[in-house]
Every structure is written in structure tokens, then in C-alpha cells.
Length: 127
Image (cartoon, helix red, strand yellow):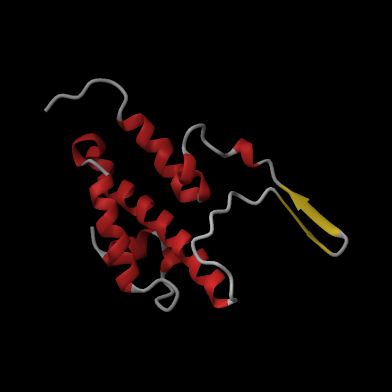
């Protein structure tokens, strides 16, 4: 798994000013410790990429908040509704949130990771 592989598989992270090589490498290093290759097998790299993407999105939210004088690291859940002038929209966040997934529900990458991770622990394992 390389930085180039990650950017190829997740082209939404190709903006090197927004998603620096250093930040991707940092989160990828953490992701490696969270994805057990004995369990994930041929999907190990995909698990690492999903964890990395999840953390990059959260880090970018923190950077965006700090850039406008907000509080970086403030915990916020998924947006359920939003209004601008006379227009409003709301979403059923419960329809896409995984039960007991906690902070992994904060991004679509986290939800994808947890969906796959839950199947990785199913059944027996022979080494």
C-alpha cells in the first residue's frame, strides 16, 4: 500500500494542498495498526484505505473549522437538517448509521469500513 495507491483508489483526495502527503502517510500509519491482515486477507489494503480516508475527512473538518475561527476537534454528529433562507432540507441519518459504530458513523468511509470489518470477524479462522 502506497500513497500513490491511495490517491488512485480515492481520487477525491488528490488535492495535495488540502490532503498533504504527510497527513495521508500519518493516518495510513495509524490505519495499518487497526486493520488485522490475518482477518482482512485480500481486503487488507482496502480496509487501510477506508480508515485513512475516514480520518482525513475528520481532520479536514477540523482544519476548516479552525480556518474560520471555529473550534477544531469539536464533536458533531451527521447533519440531520439545514436551512438557508426559506429553503430547508433534512436527512434520515438513522437510515445510514450503523448501530454501535460510534465515531465510524461520522463519515461514509467509516460506515463502509465498519460494514466490512463486521464481516471480517464472522466465522472461524484457521492459521
